[in-house]
Amino acid sequence: MSEDAEPIAYSALDQGVPLLAQSGKQFGTVEHVLQIPEEDLFDGIVVATSAGLRFVDRDQIGEITTAYVRCTLSDEQAAALPAPSGNDTFTADALQDSGTSLHDRFGRMFGRERWTQKH
Image (cartoon, rainbow, N blue to C red; front, side):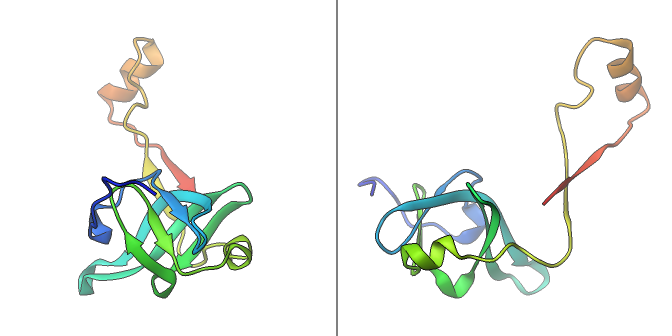
């Protein structure tokens, strides 16, 4: 796909990197990487697709590069990927309460946390 794509470790994979089926057709982008940090194990990738979030198991991934992730899935298999299951994922919005309104000022002053759930 890209001539300047360099192989990288799963831990260096950024959100938004395209995922390609075996045919080279893009079917989604990286939402986040699933890992077991205690054991330094790569578990798979949660993918943002037009049909919602889907899960690609580590055994279905052939190559991880700076420009794309190539999977060993056919186009049909990529279209039929399951939704992720397991524990919910939460993320903090770093830009929350960054404005100049009184609401934002109090948010910064009292360190209010608002976690949003990622599907």
